[in-house]
Length: 257
Image (cartoon, rainbow, N blue to C red; front, side, top):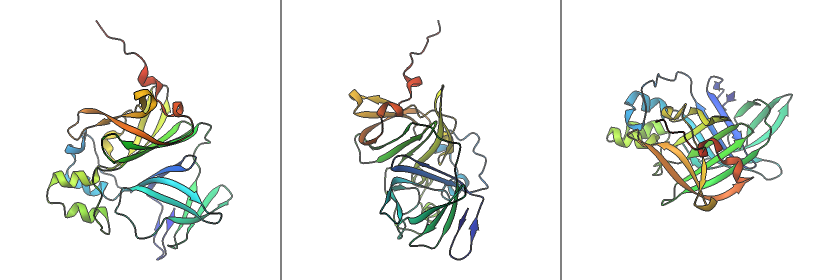
């Protein structure tokens, strides 16, 4: 639940916040999601789907605490940058975590998911050959992966406003090409179950190391639907790197005769 200063209340948006040692990722998807069946890549998205995607929220960065107030710094954001910092006060009321905003007088109620066992780890990444950043956070058998879009958003009230003003469909699609995905770690690998990009759901992230452990490689889908491997330089690691590796992706594949 979130309640805004004007009394507006939202209890229908699906929200997932995964917290690592200090890096975090957060995905917020409104109700009324369209049917994305048959959407297999960015270029398959039509204008109706793009406008719904533009109403999502999501961000990733680092959580800090100054002894009184917590701040969720947003190194990447699905929406245009807010003029307000994301700072709040946290307290538990029974099993509910209550968050009260410092700069904006909102109230949020958070409910803990299934009890998480170790590992708790995260990494900040920079794409090889560019300055695009990403975060991978793991808590127990859950993970979130966040990667930024290739170009920063212009100043605006909302992403929906920017998408509406896009000169063509290719430009509009580029605007929503910011991934925030939630998934589970199992025997079959790291499977994405919820994503800001619906065509990523049901697929594997398959994080593996490369270049002697200096890179983290992830599986992705190019805008035309072709599989692609993205290479990320490891900038800051929190925890143990092997806990962020999908060992099922390293198994040799049996070849049928």
